[in-house]
Image (tube, rainbow, N blue to C red; front, side, top):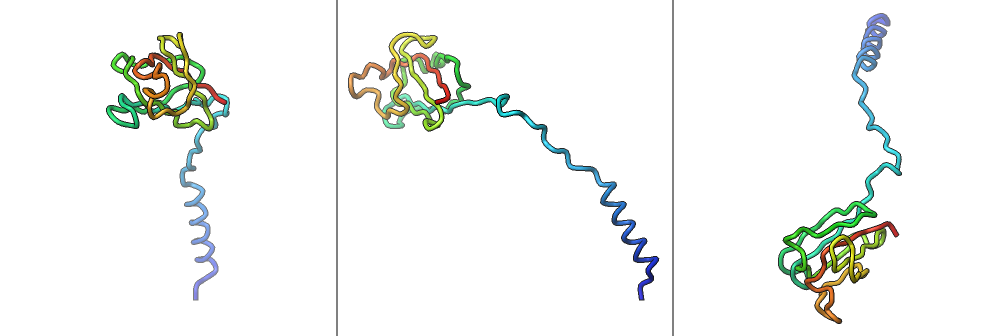
Length: 127
């Protein structure tokens, strides 16, 4: 039979072992207004998702010029978070010139074709 003294010793040892274990560190809280909000855009050099394509995370409320290798080369655009953010595409650098607010266009060459191979900058904002 197990003695009461031995049982108490085992229980005391287990309690001590658990309390001596290092506490798991909780992640630091970041208030929602400090989180970086960003949209995600996708663009391709040819219509209908063809050619070279790129996906880019875009911090909100700033204008971005497309990389020089992509200037006046984009034929397909898509705002991948169009339910939350609205992106505007511009013919000129620094968000100048004619603008286009369609959130997805698989063929920028159709219609009047003004934005096919003409996009130089873009900006996105929360809806």
